[in-house]
Image 1: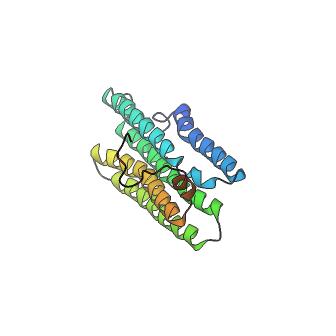
Image 2 (image 1 turned 45 degrees about the vertical axis):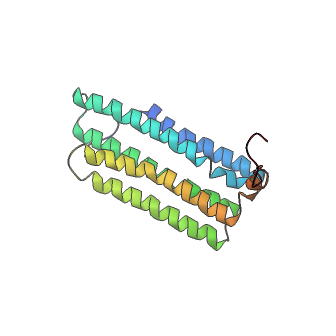
Image 3 (image 1 turned 90 degrees about the vertical axis):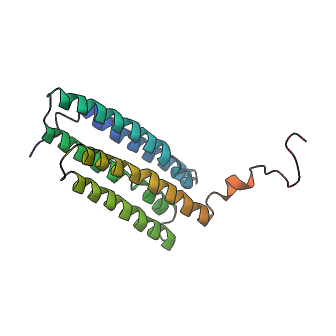
Length: 183
């Protein structure tokens, strides 16, 4: 069994995990001030950060693989580690729902949906790593990364149906019918 120690540095792990800690600290602050629902929207910048970091890691690691600095097994082990981190962080929208109302059936059903997609991403990553070639490795990373924006978007949709974002819509000026722009 190959190790990912030569492929994933401590600095890279920190770049993956510290933003999740920052998100959790912001979520705690939002919880204290009674605006926990805005934690769902913070999942989207987190997802963009992970996308950029994953693309950078994959490009750098493929260069090292082509230069024979690392083996294919080490590359696969690194892909598995990054995929598991991405699949695990896709459960963050469930934390928001449970923090908002831990006894609500809606919160638990949303958590069930988020958890299902998280486990699906975890399973796809594990399955893709058993296949030969670089394309399944890219699919494993993509599937693991896509779980967070899909979960966040679905959770925001569920939160909108629950009325968590009504205050934003009430204060948005809406044009009256029949008015033309500039009048």
